[in-house]
Image (tube, rainbow, N blue to C red):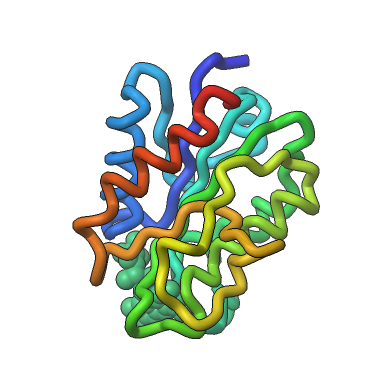
Length: 173
Ligand SMILES: Cc1cc2nc3c(=O)[nH]c(=O)nc-3n(C[C@H](O)[C@H](O)[C@H](O)COP(=O)(O)O)c2cc1C
């Protein structure tokens, strides 16, 4: 069992990857291992106890495999089979609160549902107070299931949001 935090992310090459690197830098690159979801196997999950998992919301269809090549579309069927019992997981999700105020970071909910189904302990939920949006599937019991990040219109807030968020759970991972 590795003592590090595994940061799993997708897709590669965009905002999610950049924010993933930022999160890794904040935690300390010696304390975490960054892995794109398309390289994640069941062994990856058994090797770590603590995870941070990130994705972006592309489309209101929420990653239906028929009409997207989003890395999460490809990974999701495998992800559904992975057992997270005894694992702690924090989530972050990229979204756009101005263009998609009724589906803000909905994709986080898809990941969350799989994790809960597969027995993960979720940490790092976020208050909704600091965000402007109408609706989000990623709100459960009045809180976001993870950290929303808007690189399209609020990139100036990203670093502070990450710092604040990490402080709420990093000692528990
Ligand atoms: C076609 C398309 C659909 C999108 N749909 C949503 C959405 O439903 N909800 C949301 O919050 N953001 C949505 N976004 C915004 C993206 O999540 C956002 O730009 C994100 O930073 C992209 O990250 P990536 O480059 O890692 O994919 C959408 C963007 C595109 C291009």
